[in-house]
Structure formats: structure tokens, C-alpha cells
Image (tube, rainbow, N blue to C red):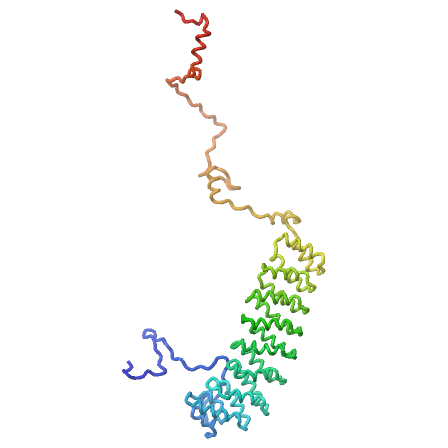
Length: 446
């Protein structure tokens, strides 16, 4: 037990007394995950040795790193400034600023290597020096500054904004490539900032820059914002066909997120002069709700397009769009102008009616099966002794049928003692007639 008043250790881990597993683990300081700090043997230095080496007070220090004995110098101390404890951040920041203006290019390169990592803890004046060293006279320093810009862009978009804008337009291929790599990494952390960069890049007269910007649109098209829709619209109106092709590839993804905007852009792209743009528009329509009025009109008009690829894609969608009667009527109209043999064969298949033009086997196969008899009707028919289809009558429900050869025995009628009076007797007619027309020989014998 911990005595009362004794502070708990910082690295204390509470554990379950039954299982021994940690209940709550102490959290350590972690760097931003958008970039990977450069690792090396300077990480094995003691903080005091790091400060002494970076200041120049200590010429060298020997450390063990991966089963090797290595000698650390001032440039290694500069790289290790990112690993000093928090109470040393102030002096370490001052040493890093001095390293940026050192006459030795190796020291400046070491300072640039640790810049993104150190900026997470204190970034004052660091990015100002970065913009300066991007134009350093030493080529190695320039390369290290471009790499630092690429690594810092996802975490510090505002700090490197102006530097990134300049490097994206640099005539040096290596410098511009590093900037574009940083902008691509920025799409995962700050897509809205990427949209601002693309907005200005689409206005550049250089078609190569606009093409690269169109690729960035594909990376941020998942953002359901009006800014991205504006970028797509402007890119579809670009005079360069490659820019339009690149942004048109993002339309199917856009259609999944917003049907209305996807339909509008597909309607514009399907009339583009470039066939690849039109084909992307058809792929977009396939992702849309085909029952939608505008999407239906696009498919019907695409079935008459001059581009055979567009016609093929639209004709494949026709059976899913309309019933058999409408389809045959449209096919008859399309066959009048269709010249592609494969499409003619497909249209003839759509027009074929097995019930009218097929063989006997095809007609029988096209017949729909009879509807099932409801259970309640089956019970009524069985109770009446009737057959259901070809099913034989069950003995439990069958009625007993007499043999026609056997004649039933007549039943004897027993005489009754009561005589039923006739109708004349009931009405009283018989007695009067007998009295009036009675003959002499019928007179009772007296």
C-alpha cells in the first residue's frame, strides 16, 4: 500500500488484482502522426550531451546504437534537439535558430532535418528560416529545405502556405516535385487548404500546373462543399483536354455523394468534344438513379451519339430503363441509323419476342407458370370432393361412390291407419255433385 501523503509515481499503471492486466495506462507525449520524425543514433544521447554538442561546448560523444559504437558530433547534437525535455525547449530553440545561419552547410542541413519535429513544440521563426533556406546557395541545403517543407505541410499549412505556393510553381523539377508531394499529403489533413491552392493553380497559364491541380481535385472530391463543386465546374471548362479528362474521372464518385450535382456535370461532360470525357460522363450516368428524368434523357440522347463507345454504354442501359413495349419501339427507331454491326446485333436481340417469333420450345419457355391456388380454396375443393389440378383425391376427402351394377333394394312402405283426405273432399265439391247427378240405380237400397 502507498503511504498516506506519498505522491503516486508518474509511470504508475493500475492493474486488475484478479487478472493483472492494466486498467489505465499513463499517456505519453506523442508527436503529430502526419509525418515521421527522422530517427538516428542521436536519439541515444543524453539531453545534457545534446545541448552541449549543439552549442559546440562538447566536441564529440560516443554512444551505442544498434550494437555499434558511434561518435556523435555537433550536427548530431542539432538533430537531437527535438528530443530534449520540455524545460530545455527554450535554450534548444535558440540553438536551432543559430544553426540555420551557420556557415557550415552540414549544420544547416541538420537543422532543417529536425525543423518539422521541433516545430510541433515551438515554431517561432522556424518557417521564416525555411523560406530563406529554400533559396540557399548550397544545393544540399536546398534539397533538405524542400524535404522539410514536404514533411511540415500536412501539420503546418498556414506556416508553409507562401513557401508552398512558390515551390509548386518552381522551374526546378526536384523542388516542385517535393512541393506537390507535400500538397498531396495535405489532402488527408487539411483538404480545404488544398482547395484554396487548386483554386489559384487553375488560373495559371501553364497547362502542366492545371493538370496537376486537376489530380488534386480527385483527392478532395469526397468533400461535399460548394468549393469543390466550383473547382470541378471550372476544370470541366478548361481549354486543355487533359485537364477535362482528369477531372471527369472524379464524376462517378461525385455522383454517389450528390445525385443532383453528378447529373448536372454529366450532362455537361456528355457533350464534350473529347471522347474520354464523354465516356466518363456515361460512367457517371450508370451510377445515377436511372429513373430520374434528366438521367433518362441523357441515356436516350447518348444512344444516338456519334461516339460508338457512348452509344454502346447507353444502349446497354436501355433494358433497365424501359419496359418491353417501349424498348421495341425505340429499337426500331435506332436500327434505322445504327451502323455498328455489334450494336445492330444487340438491338435485334432487344427486339426479338420469344412469344411471337420463337420456336415452340421458346414459346413454352416464355409462358409464365400458373398462379398458385390459395390454401383456403384447396380446402373448399377437397371438401367438395373435387380434384386440384392433377393431384389425386385423397381418401379422407373422397366421397363413397356406389357401384352402378348393384341395384338398390326397394324399401317397404308400412301402411298407416290414417287416411289423408283428397282436395275435393277438403273443398266440399264431391258431396254436392254426387247428390245432384246420382242415378236411380245408384240410389241406396232401402
